Image (cartoon, rainbow, N blue to C red; front, side):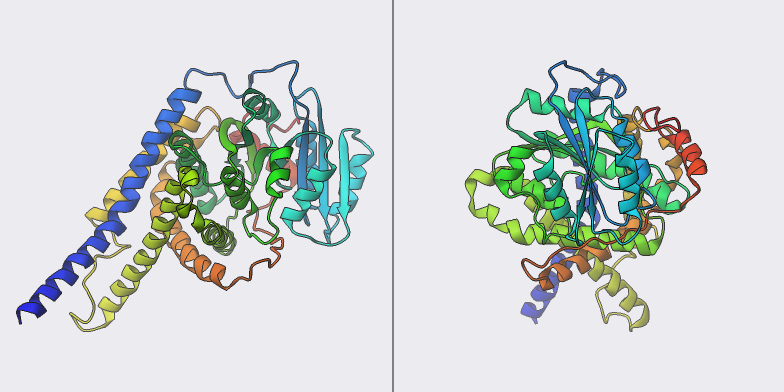
Length: 448
């Protein structure tokens, strides 16, 4: 009888501990991110130059802008024209058509005849983004490679902000920029505007304060070609080539930095289906990186990567536990009382979820302070951020759980192919530019 009581008490304490982890882990990480991001902001951004007035040197290294394209007929011309408008003394633009089946090739060929700085590479068949980037890197004339996506609008000052780090420190292999959302026509779009500031941008600032980056932004990162060559370029079997290359470079001893002044304007999914596919791909790629790099725990020389690995593992455990709590909560509603452990609702507001929601709003308020100088109109999306824990936690948690299972089932060496993403609501070109001008800085304006 006594032993049964002790076991029951022990299991109850363990269950309360797991519940406490589910509720308080996001809180702990949120305040940790805010503190780390604040330290980065005061050290690297406060009192500095406007992003529109970058430090310039007459001996700046030349740059090759790489734009991998797959079925980007709707966006290729606008993306290439913005890249060609770069305010930089010596650069070229290399567009890589990765076996597109639409009119991407014809659009790029027409642009070549008009712009001497533009070069176009046509791959005979679809190879995947990693191979397209590698092809562009091998054909590029310059050592610094500024890589953007085929639907991204590069701010004309970005190259100056990024190249200075390569010139200052020969150990820098990559500098990632600051993506900003330009489609804000739906609730999902507006919430993602806040997400990229309060989650993505804040985490990158904090991680740089504490040591290493988990990932560069695949939509805007400048690389040192010699560093890429040393680590074997991007891995063609990884769904998220940006996470993989970040770890490969840092494992090899290179530094990876974050430059918030280097802006690029991007399109994001605005449907639940498109958002789910994107987050599932991100989660699967993150799980692949975890499985491939778990061995860093036995290499003391790679201890700078241990915090990133620990955070990745804890986030994975948190997602599985949150899923378990959700399932038990549902079962508790339909099964007799006492059949399953009693858990508080992970959805209906209580003191725990209300505290998380309040922390989410505080985090966005702090991030708005950091990113307000780069992105107009952030305040207009403040109200919508209260929905972030409800909508995105469900999606991201499900994607994390499903992505890990998916990563376990993928064969090593299996080629990762392009997936045409949901780019949000589309308008005619003129209307889209007018809408963008209301939220974008002068670097991304209708007259570019």
